[in-house]
Image (cartoon, rainbow, N blue to C red; front, side, top):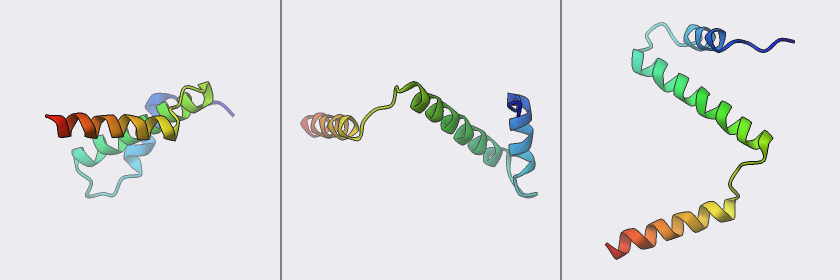
Length: 68
């Protein structure tokens, strides 16, 4: 099965929005779908960040904000 083109994915996402959707709704949806695609690609490539690394980064960020 051939993969859908980017344009086809965008058109489908917009068509699936409710009739009263705003431009902001469409943009949010497209950004969300893009982020999902990026995340899936990262997972396939093995370039994800472990939960332990995320927690350590958040802890360091909190500590640096508290020190300010």
